[in-house]
Length: 70
Image (cartoon, rainbow, N blue to C red; front, top):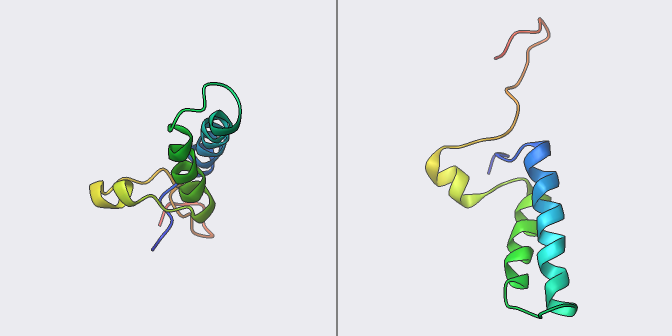
């Protein structure tokens, strides 16, 4: 599994996942909190299965020592 989630995407997933998980403990206590676990899990491992299926990646292109994309 190669990483397909970039740093900005990971930060957004962590914030959104934490907010959704907090709904399980405070507030309306909706089942949407469990979606937060998925967001946190994908952010922590850096790999998103739907992105892989669709061929998407938000990671920056690797750069060679010369400064050009590989």
